[in-house]
Length: 329
Ligand code: SF4
Ligand code: SF4
Ligand code: SF4
Image 1 (cartoon, rainbow, N blue to C red):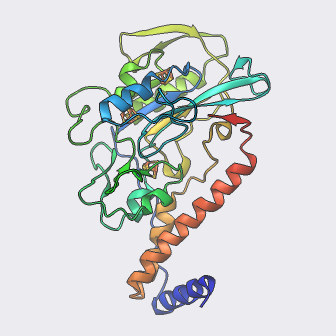
Image 2 (cartoon, rainbow, N blue to C red):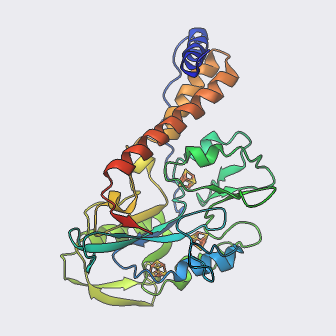
């Protein structure tokens, strides 16, 4: 039997048994005062201090690449790297945040989605979203290494330690996993603490959304006091506002994320894909619950996962074709 025929038969089996489709599950709501981060790409100078701090605090090994055999030089997230700074360039790449002849930085790590696909597909609840802080964590003792979360993440974030015999999933946990627990001790995430320009700020999602809106309301060139570490912190610097793209990435995408982005070039250039407001988790769980009503439990679980993975694979193909990236490393 071909895979397509199997899927049709499986879907038919489940749906035939169901009395009626289950009511659509809406997106999960943001957790009030959930922990969040605002990354303002226009402030980032690409120093990679955040990458070094992330490695040190989380005990991650260096990842030499190509000719850079003496230095940690990861090209992307991996089983050894939870945070990476990438650069987009076009033309002669002379001017920061210039669409025609410029360059821009982007910080890549887990966005701590409000309604995370990775949590939705995890069969053993190893991937969890903290009900108070909203931080998404992976419990290595519960994880069975199926890597469903890897395929389900719309942002291509969780990575498996293929270099280890008993590999674990690696991804940003806001430096608050057991053994690190910086937030529980009242400390900042490592990447925020060391960021010299305030490109990465920590706070509640509400605070950071308000800060992002204030920045979008600035006229280009208008002086603004940019804080470091947290909104309202004593440390910071004054500089002229850039020309922002008028969109807070992560406010609404897939039901919202707890890492928010401001940029000076279109988000797609920086690998932040255009996404709908409805979360993938809400759609796949509606499909699953419809099938469960027909008592087709294994088919339901498979159908939910297959839908979410297929959506990601299609979308990544689209991004590869038209995101405008000319060079990235
Ligand atoms: S970005 Fe990916 S890994 Fe992070 S919470 Fe969202 S779905 Fe999960
Ligand atoms: S919050 Fe911690 S784990 Fe996440 S990117 Fe920053 S330093 Fe790395
Ligand atoms: S430490 Fe701050 S300025 Fe430096 S690369 Fe990271 S986000 Fe950018």
